[in-house]
Image (cartoon, rainbow, N blue to C red; front, side, top):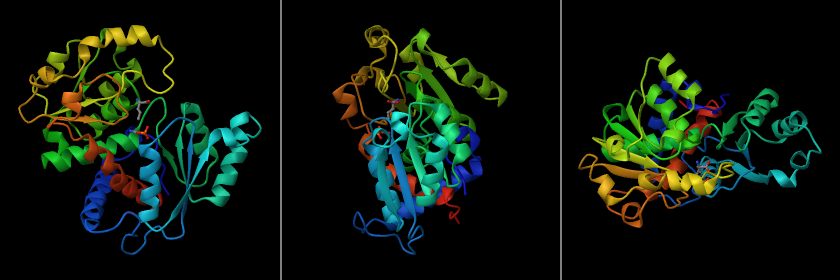
Length: 309
Ligand code: CP
Ligand code: NVA
């Protein structure tokens, strides 16, 4: 079995295997209905338990469909309905029960420490469905989308992130090292990536280009990514932050500083970091990006269950 917690810790060989499997499965599903089961029912009789401590639309639905299409089932828990959520039961005991009843655990949380603790006590695969420090399932799926649209390896493209240095960017940085693509980041000075992340990049002999001018950041970009300026449960001064990010709004004018065929991607939900013209415009592929999560999630599940070819 394998956990799926952070792209930094997964071999690129395995990440590539997941992407290849997702491509194959997506092609095979063209004429299939939503809940039709993939040939061979590879996760027949397996139960995925999902738990959310924070809101979710896409991650919740895509994991539900993913396990169902592989022949298994899912149950979704809200942490505040468990004893754990009220401090009435330990992570250790909760993890033992989850491992007794379920075959895999997908967890969205506000605490990286909790991810580590669950990992210690679970005897079933654990998937990080978003934590303060990373959103690995989102970014692996985004790489799938980029390669599907651009029809070439992401290592041949220049990727740009305009936005906050949040969990999604952390995973994108990890991916840039793993998949060797050029990554530029456009953000206000105070909101750059954390030192330890940049240190990890340096340790791996790679570079991420940080600009405090959005035009410089998007120059020559093939893909522009963005995300909400204010993440769920962001503890900082929101008003001040929004003001700082004002000149980083993604407009058609800013898109014009990138490559002619540059595409726009956004993990959703969106705030006002991007104009409607860009978000709903020709260069935007956000709906395909969201729908691809099902395909990639399926191959992540197979990797976790040790069933990936
Ligand atoms: N992009 C994403 O993870 O969406 P949800 O928060 O709706 O799951
Ligand atoms: N950075 C965002 C991503 C949401 C999918 C958040 O953590 O809220």
